[in-house]
Amino acid sequence: MRVLLPVARGPARLAPGAGEPLLGALLLRCLTPGWVLLRPSPPTRLLAWAEEAVAVARRAHPSRPVRLARALALHAHVLDALGRHEEACAVVAAADAVPGARLSQAQAAYLLHVRAQALLGSGRAEEALEAARRCVDMYRHGPAPAGRDRFLGSLPGALRTYGLVLGALGHTEQSVLVYEECAELLRSMSLRESSRVLLVMARVFVELVGGLKALGRHEEALALGPEARESLGGGMVLAYPGIVLPLRAQLLVDLADCHGAKGEWDTARTTAEEAVTGTRTPAGAAWLPVALRCLADTLAEVDAPDEELRALQELADLYSEASPATDPLLAKTLDDLARCHRRAGRHREAVTVTERGIAAYRRAVAREAAHEPELARVLANLSLRQDDAGDTESAVVSAREALTLTRRLAESDWETHHPLTARRLRVLGQALQSADDLAGTVFCHEEAEAVLGEHPDRQGVEAELATTRSVLADALRASAAVADLDEQVAALRSLLALTRRADATDVHATCVRAFAEARTDRTVQA
Image 1: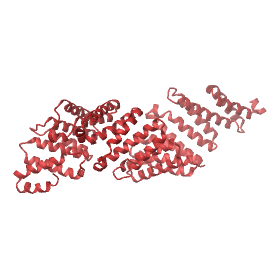
Image 2 (image 1 turned 45 degrees about the vertical axis):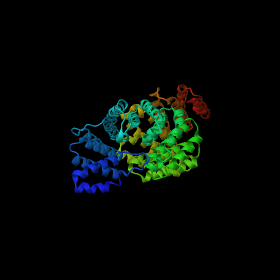
Image 3 (image 1 turned 180 degrees about the vertical axis):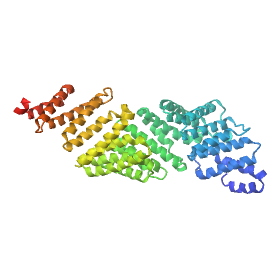
């Protein structure tokens, strides 16, 4: 049919009355999906055919509006596949409004299917949900599509879109139920029937694995893994490399996460490495950062610092070369990279890399204030790393900025950010201690203790409170060792009060040692 298109255009120009209907029919035939393993035409060529088909249908079939509606539906499908979702929505609306067009049930269901996909792509998931539900109902209760309509859509495809929309709305359990129904339907199909929905089958199995992982049903996700892998094999890679390779990467990343959740770290590492290898192609390149992140996280768990460092460095290089939209991902990667350097004792390198991450976060904050909490967190990390590198003055400056930013965030969201000021205060206290500012150190840790006391029901607050009181006890013990008698006595009294309210063995032991070390006649009398 594609070969005949140039031939048909000649008669269409010379004798429009007879030639244009033939050309329009050929264009619609070329746009309608055919055998799934036939290599598809490039999207730009499909778009050109779709626009030509619409133009021909308007001229050649004024008395057959159904042809125009069908051409518009196929045009919308191509636009949606190209990521032009808003335009696709507009074309779907035009197809739905063609005067006098009486679509068959299969064609009407296909139009609803395209509408649901276009609405979902444009971020209007709530509207897409209704279209997807109606599409499923039409396929369930209507006659089976016949002729070329069989290639327009099917119940498995509609169910897959319905599950996708439910997942986008956060209804993960309902989404998984729909995917499981779709998977059972696909398994029950004959070889001939399933040959038309091979792409749908691959997507359903891969997305079902992801849904099961999201629900914590890791055993079921891993059990489905071999079937999902099989659906991506054969001639599918040759026919649809741009679709199948990303799907395979997504599947392998999900399987690696499931193995990791079960503590099977060696298998998780092997699977993550397979995902990275599979994405080192032009068709899978978009998933290479995701696969590298999965591998880096897995290597951190199996304690392979050198390999983790290499994976994070490659990931940082990828994000550095990408668009500014990846600045938050770049900053997070650089923070993890700095952690690896710090663990290896390369403190100066850790500081340099963290400063690059902070610069990336500042660029992201300039575009969107939602990244400010992460900026505050990494500023605190920078302070710790500067302290390790011996740059105490810079450590104090970074810690103060992190604390100031967190206090400002707490003004708008007290429950979320106010408890985090305790962590920032501890970091500042550590920097001040390195700068020999004992009074400032004690003040920071005392305020941190008071902050945590305002959130007694927060998860993990007891452990944080114990850590804070332990470091406060050490700071008070150091203050009790100074020469000034008044300061020494004040520190001992504060330490005694801390011991009584903390009821912790380590704090008690620090208190006993501090009193023993300060036992001079002058101190005892005071």
